[in-house]
Length: 139
Image 1: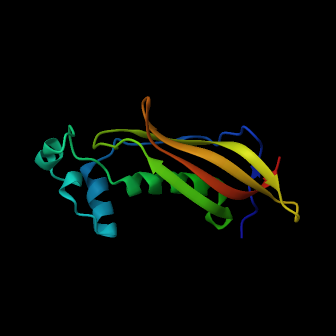
Image 2: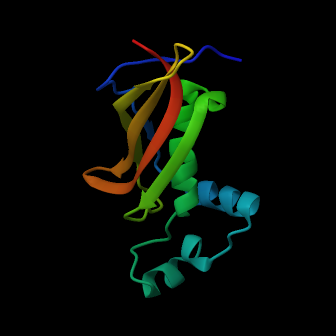
Image 3: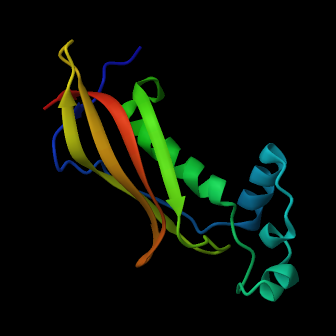
């Protein structure tokens, strides 16, 4: 098991930028998760639904955010993870994954529970916001 990361109030782990999102990214995720909604692969269907082009699955964006977070803290230290979807990620978009430590709670064993507010953004648009709690060491 990896040692928990050190976390300080206000800390912002280095953001990650991904993209541009490709049709291949979406097809791979559809195959893995079984979500073959034409909104994710059919340009005409997406246009009829009011989008400029097909959109990525929300769970794909959430998965990218979870991977970024657990690369920082270690998946074995993740205690809670929740997201709220606010805008779609479209083919061709670039997404930035980021977060900030907003609370620390000391545990009896010398470790700390660190709460992070999380975001996935496209330029100035928040695609999803979230919150996570991870086991950490106080800085």
